[in-house]
Figure 1 (cartoon, rainbow, N blue to C red):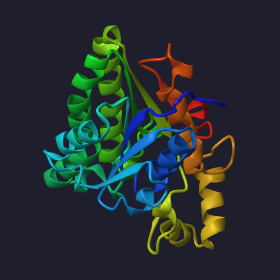
Figure 2: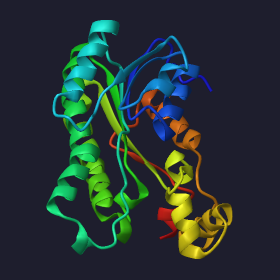
Figure 3: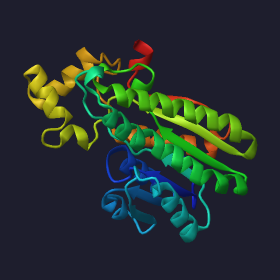
Amino acid sequence: MDFQLTDRVVVITGAGSGIGLATARTFLAEGAKVVAADLDPSAAGELSESVTALAVDMSREDAANFVIAETMRIHGRVDVLVNNVGAFPFRESFLTVSDAEWHELMNLNFYSAVRACRAALPHMIEQGRGAIVSVASDVGRAPDRFFVDYSVSKAAILMMSKAISIEFGPAGVRSNCVSPGPTRTPAWDRPGGFGDSLAAEYGLEKELAIDHFAKEVRKLPLQKVGDPGDVARVIAFLASDVSKHVTGADYTVDGGVVAAA
């Protein structure tokens, strides 16, 4: 499908791996120009000469202004902002999460998106058009006890996105969310990652443990975890003129888990 994204300037945070990298790849395939912001954006930078790779820590208060300023300096416009950067640390209990851990997680997952939107919106308003797509999560609606602060940060993303859609819709700016469920990013497969943790938890080989998690623990109707490309294609749709009458929405890409809850 032609998403009509040729030469659109797309800023993606957390573009160095996983969903962010898949999103960069998808936009490039649609002819867009990508600004990839990440602690290590090298993988995105290697995709194409149409990628501007910015090594930046999005948890820093000045990071978003830097990324948008560089985008304007290089391209003179910002058409799409994808708020994707985030972390999801495993927590044993609500009672064990310290103030410092709450602050650190909310700063990266939520406030980085607030600052990115605040930096990009004036340019989109001046252009008379723009699209913001923020990556939330299925646990933003159905919280996971082991990811309590992550769940709260994603619920906040959902409400921020809707608030932006209401205020800035008249200026031509659309704001939507994509809420992935379990998605097979590198965090699942690195040594000591989520896949290994599941294997240890269930006493199974890693692939069998992941299969058990999808079918018996999360009870996904599609019975498998997702692929980053599944999420990336929905992000591209929401950023495109194909969805020009869609704003304030949350598209779940979770194998049906929220609908089944």
